[in-house]
Length: 345
Picture (spheres, rainbow, N blue to C red):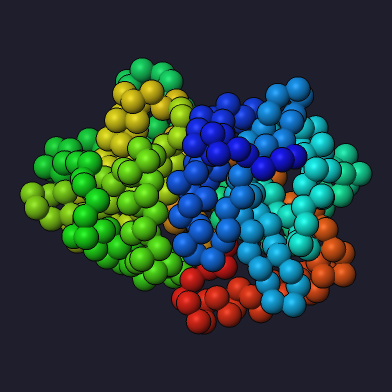
């Protein structure tokens, strides 16, 4: 494994899109440079897999008393479990670190039994909250896509349109950021999850929009914003990254029309897979799960839940890695939450 050249960093996104997994937006250069502003140092590395090069974004952060933690967000971009082993062996050569965390987008039924021989162990804590998700196939014709939705979902979409709700892609300005963050705050209060600071969202919304990788959409009744979502795109894949809605005019079912119109625009732009991001795993499915409400909404578009293998660790310094698992990660996450009102990762 070697550092990327200046020319490779310049063309980084094209290299990531050529990875076996067809790329992920969290491996993009825009995401790496964004995380630089939030305590993480991006490193752009090139490895070799099956005779072809693999572009890997690694984020590095120093932890007092332990050294550095490395993280490949939604990477490395392998498409088979066997491809991770040689990459892991190369990652073990990284200096000044105690662990490399990886979470490749491999399905949960991937055979991971051989990873131990390459020093890959299951992480006790997941980094991403999207270990399980719902995917919508945008390759069929529009009529076939909407026909695949649950009847109640189709009804809500048509009701919303009949009642005068419209969906617009809006420019990312201070006022639209404020409006979107208010919607997310209202949703957070209802659902009880933690919301990162406004500055965090504002910065990466602007960066990814400037890179052509993200757009903000509002569902509106006349001039009132009822629901919003920020959607990221990378190659032929897109993700429902952030969303929120108001309880006002809840009977108009604006979030359903919002998602459908976003799907139509993505499909017209060449996207083939839309990832609705973050639902409970089937084994954890219950009304008490914090994501259960999200599942009820998202499952209207597709009932099938897709699970990924989640976060895995490549320990570099075993004593320090054990300390991190025993107390370091918990203390670091609590400190980040209390001091910065944010998540560590």
